Image (tube, rainbow, N blue to C red):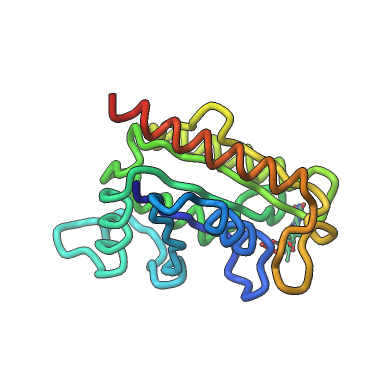
Length: 180
Ligand SMILES: Cc1cc2nc3c(=O)[nH]c(=O)nc-3n(C[C@H](O)[C@H](O)[C@H](O)COP(=O)(O)O)c2cc1C
C-alpha cells in the first residue's frame, strides 16, 4: 500500500509536517508512506502551462499521485484558508484528475483553539471539486498544536496520537474498500 503525505507548510519546523512524520512512524510495515517535498518546485498554476510539454515538476507530482493508493494532507491555516502553495499544487491536478476517487485523509493543525478549521474546510471544498474520496473518519482538526509537540517534533499529547492512529486506520480501510 503506497501513501503520499503532503504538508501545506514550507517551514522547516512546521507542526503540520511533524504530524506527518508521526503518522509515518505509526504506519504498519506493509505501508509505504512518502512525504512529498516538491511543493515549491511547482510553478504557479496557469492553464496555459497545462499542455503537452508540462514542467517536469508537474509531471512528477501527477505521477506520484497517480501511482499511490491513498493521500494524507496536513494543512496549516493562513488568513482563514489553506496556504497558497497547497492550493497551487491542487490546482495542477484539476484537469488531469489524479485524485478522482482516490482515498484521502485530511489534517489541520494550528496554535489556535479552532485548529485551523477554516483551512480544513477550504481544503475539503477543493478536494470535493477534485472528486477525491474523503474517507469516513479520515479527518482531524488539531487545536493548540504548539502545546502538543515537543522540540524534537514528537507528539506528547496521547489523545492526538490516538486521533492520528484512527485517521490512518480510516485511510487504510478506505483504500481496501476502494479496491473492491
Ligand atoms: C501569515 C499568517 C497567517 C496566519 N493565519 C492564521 C489563521 O487564519 N488561523 C490560524 O489558526 N492560524 C493562523 N496562523 C498561524 C499558523 O496556524 C501557525 O503559524 C502554524 O503553526 C503554521 O503551521 P506550521 O507549524 O505547520 O507551519 C497564521 C500564520 C501566518 C504566518
